[in-house]
Image (cartoon, rainbow, N blue to C red; front, side):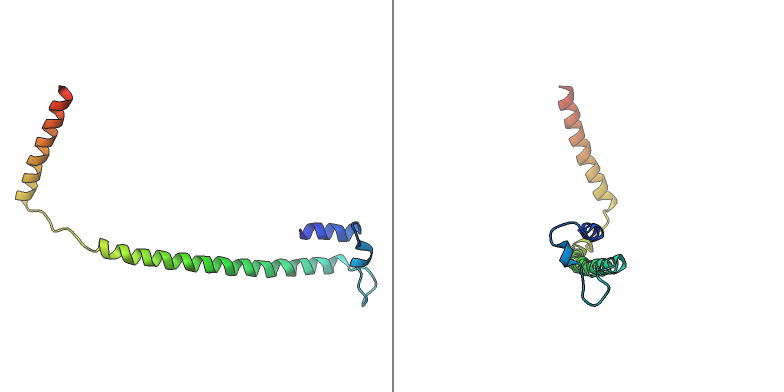
Amino acid sequence: MLLTLIRLLRCGDGPGTEDAFYYSAGKGQMDEKRILELAVEALENHKEEVELEIEAIRSILNAATTAHKSETATLVARKRRPRTAEEKKAQSRRMKKIWAKRKAAAAA
């Protein structure tokens, strides 16, 4: 958009350009350097607005992430107690029975 404005100002084309780009204090037509300075100033203002919006969104995301982490931290903090050798052997026997049934069903 700003580049289009600059092109119009350079060429002097477009509706109302004969009056719109003159100013009373100087020699006549606004020089290209001043136009570019104004364009840079406008872009910098827009950049600041965008950066503020990005910062606000990031703070919202960080707050949500922190809240989620604190909820899951309480769930993760609980650890299992170690199994005894007897419990491990019982589990092994149960799993051997399950796999034996699956193997027999697959063979049939």
